Length: 190
Image (cartoon, rainbow, N blue to C red):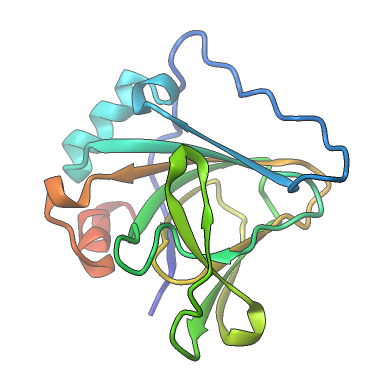
């Protein structure tokens, strides 16, 4: 099973006036990551939105911006909880070349640890000892379709802060319930 696909799609344009969010200064007492949730039209220009609607029959309904400082990583998580995990995301990565994404196989039932995420939702998290490594991607491409309902972790092993613009579609609207279904909608661009 593949956990990601490099996408051969146009670059993402930003709407006029877009600026990156301000990152809190790191003082050693907080996480080395940060995240924000935005309206899609506040991050993606109309031309890119139209491309996804026409070519992939997708309308994005959420956009996250994820920031990871150089030399830092996220916890192992799925995007959501076992009951409502988001299956996929289209990620545009800035300054992330050389970073890694690890996906893991579950070796036992989720231990029940959930953490708050931006926007007030929860994500299920794991300790590495409770999983086995399934796949590692060394990021050498800035546009990816990634699986987000399998436990995964991002490691920024570069000297630069990593930004990720992560777009999610409405699975109910598109009736996409599985990873295989979303991969089919991108087949032309993989």
